[in-house]
Length: 377
Image (tube, rainbow, N blue to C red; front, side, top):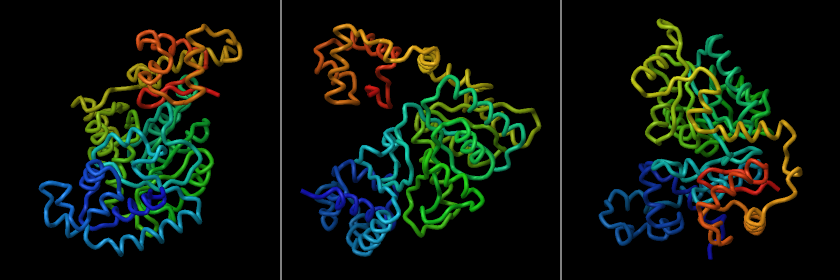
């Protein structure tokens, strides 16, 4: 049996094979089931991939240099507390896994899960106005009061991005910056102080090995990670053309909800938002309430209100017999989907749905991405 580090090494090496797009590589991975299987069949890939082109075999045939580079990277990562997360790892962002062009490997330095209960990305122009700064500040302040269990994602760039990260830190939210280069550098350097704070209240994420420059094409590519790992995209300010609009478009393609704040007609950095709203590319929002209502996250507000009022789990020591069955099942194996809970508790799904809602309101369980239920220990 292969060790996890060997599978990780092969996955890292495959990302260094020239002329293989993320979509092609992920398609191969899903078809064969592992990076190891791809490497093992690299010299006769047509035997396991009907219709494989000679070009694909040529790309895969010479992997020695890529493996040496992956070994160097893995040693560097272990030395500097960088986590190499492959597509199959539990720590891989579950939402991003749904995307057809998701990276096979991500590199992460941080302290929080990339699979938070709620994840939103906040993006926009690099020339954020005072109006845009106020929108970001008010949005995040209000989210703290009604939806505190949230991860805020952006790109650590100038303007809206850095404002989102700083306001998240100020309001106690974890925040992750998706970078367009390796984790041995930081661009822009002026944001280093904020980035360091994020390591203990969030993290830094990239698909690139160390030594990768912040080239223009990498900024465009990183937008798909920002979009794909989020439940929703919030566009704050944007000119007629800009990176924030790219992230919004990718979010729509990934079937994520897209929201935009409107601006005054004629303002350069509201033009992109206004056009997007006009063309039904984004829902208009003016507040955190609009976002929460559109996403159907009112239960988060109700639960937080109950907890703020002192209605905590310890005030509900008496659970019904059926509620206790659910808790016992989650104690034995936490983070289960409802169909698995139905099997372990011998309760029908319809009955479980009501029970889980009651347990969530009591602060005993919470829902995670993918309909997974987590027992709050």
